[in-house]
Length: 311
Image 1 (cartoon, rainbow, N blue to C red):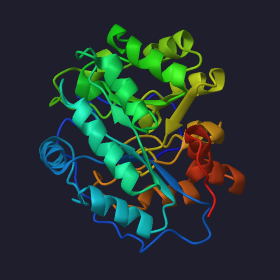
Image 2 (spheres, rainbow, N blue to C red; image 1 turned 90 degrees about the vertical axis):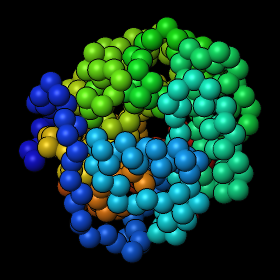
Image 3 (cartoon, helix red, strand yellow; image 1 turned 180 degrees about the horizontal axis):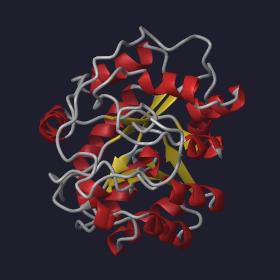
């Protein structure tokens, strides 16, 4: 892997033109004690049947799932290994799912206060604006959207009520708006839907909206460097990109240029390698100063979601 930030040279089929392998790499028993407090800003929690359907899709089209853990076990696994808090994400694959997923997430958060739970909505479904409001009223901290799964672009007009409510209430929107990892198994073409300019249109139209793009905007690093330098309502997370798993360049400049706008995340439990692989990479391979590493590992997420990041 090279240390570069130009757009990743992927073929038209994308990174997931076929299933990728498991790594079988070693894992640590818990986080190193010398690390600053850690918030995993990208963890997935679903009801059992939804998790199992997602795992079947990944096994067929993505990568082997190393940690087939259901929601209570996901939470116990991470918290018992030294993670201070988790930002828990869910997303609706079709209309009519979101309200039940949001109720599920709110119940999980009530049982474990160290979980920062986000709700979801399917763009354009009946009552979408009310679904978002109800999720926030239930104590959820924001909304998660997924362009690849929900077949929409970041600037899709169907998202206007979502953005309006979240901007008015100061609730972050986490939207998988990067082009990769693209798979032919999706019902739509992420390369046609996802472009950094579409994200910029949202940032311009909703200057008070807190917008989070996971996976460092994979695969348009240079474009997201430009946005990160220009907009204070944009955040990124590092999920799966710093793990040296995909055959891509290492996004050093994007991680280090504004650590107060970058958050550590993993995609746990839906990963094919060790649970702590990404955090070790951030510590060892990005040249972050101790204060900058502390920001990426937890302080940025704590600030965004209004929680404490100290032991």
